[in-house]
Amino acid sequence: MGYPIHTRLEYHERASRLTTFFRIFMVIPHLFVLIFYAIAATVLSFIAWFAILFTGRYPEGMFGFQTGYLRYATRVRCYASLLTDQFPPFGAGSPDDGYPIQVTAELPEHLSRLTTFFRYILQYPAYLVQLALSFLESLMAIVAWFVILVTGRVPRSIFEIMELPQRYYVRYTAYAQLLTTDRYPWFQPEDEPDDVPSAEWNQPLPPPPSA
Image (cartoon, rainbow, N blue to C red; front, side, top):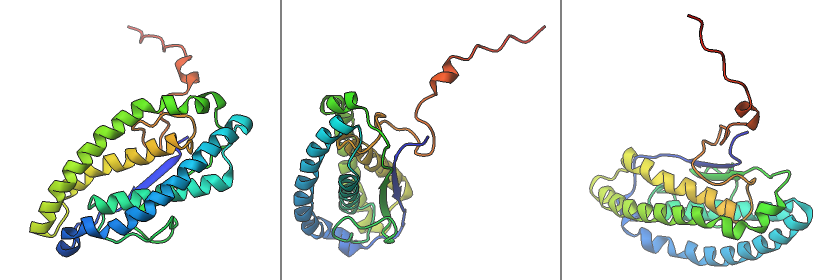
């Protein structure tokens, strides 16, 4: 089973020097909207924590709201960091709205009550990783800002470096908001299992080849 949070970032080489120069001002309206969105998402996450402890499931309506918030927050982050030149729509959007930044999540059938109860403690190692990657993202955004103003392009090498913090931000935030299954947010490929099934560890070693 692949990782349940999916992030798609489309690379476009060309970028507008004008909107890049004023990017810090252009993103301000989104930041105001995002503040209120984040407050609502935090309150629902707290409610979902109790719901999971009682039922072992994430309420589907809340799950859709939280996924929409995560999609919107990621789009704003990517726009602010110059990973995309396309002004993001306000609100959650949808996976088929054509925007080059997409986040989707699979609704888990069951969540562990134990790891949910301790989630706000368990998330701290991942939070420290997120802080370090966010610092890297900020440095690379400054570099990208100057490069775009000079060349009008986003080098793929810079895009790929900045892509990693965004993908990890999505996984960490989903884990903190209880959206994912109970797997920890490291750097697993989205389409591959993040660990080896226990049955494989129990298989006997093959006999040595005969001489």
